[in-house]
Length: 350
Image (cartoon, rainbow, N blue to C red; front, side, top):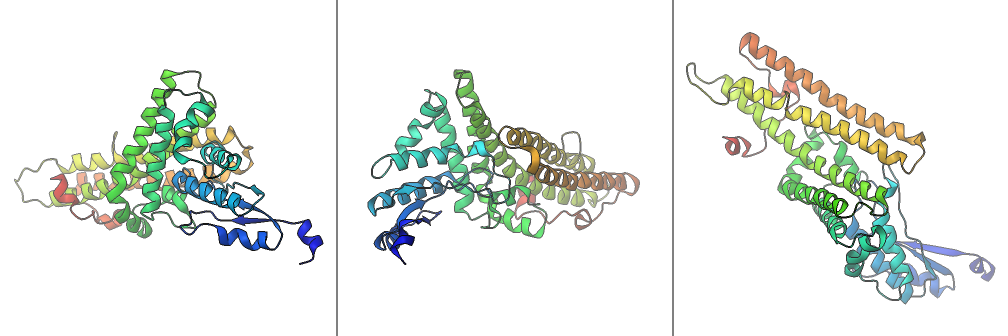
């Protein structure tokens, strides 16, 4: 290439995941050719209900350090809103570590950043918000390490996925072993955020703290959805077996009780419709704190569409309850869109 072109060009080498072999091969072709190069790591927020922060921290640390070592002139720390759902106030952790890694000489310390983030950014001297970030990082690492989100959809796709669909059943089998620790990490983060707010009502960057709380609630609801769907499938199977019990044999809980547990005042179907509705309102609030309203509507429509799916199942279950009252028979689970219960579920609830 002519020198005049090289003099006017900045190449940007990108790598959005940690690389065990380092990033020399992405950088050296440009520096060896006399072309100015910047490195471009990522905060790993794209298509995620909360950024994959461990991936981001490792990637930013390695790529930026290698950039300094092999002659890069700068760093362009990237974030992406591929499916339009990413919320700006969820991104500060990765953005600020990118700034720290870019300004510091050599390899920036991840533990030092994790221990100082909340004090510097939020004015939280208790360390509670740092712990909350660590809980969110651990939760997202569980989802990432178990390969639950596809490259094209990430965990946003999991949030919308119907656990009773064919694809949802495949994911349900993978998420069952981790759903309990996943929810515990998220719920612990919610507790820590609340404790931090009570300890210091004057914390800075309140919108970013609200986004942390919302991110934790989305993770928790994601786990709840898969748990509730398994429980409903097992509960309906048990109702069917109770319905055909020999005459005169008392079985507890009875069919009405089992159906009410699925669809009732405190039914699991209600938990899902109310949960998605709450997430919708919280999402809208988060969006309007950072963005113009123009592209919000498609996401709210996705919430409404998903709520309608579960509302339609409430209506079907209401019909099943009425059928039981009229004829003491129940529809097939498949007629209601309910899959077979997970292995061992019926034994576990008896």
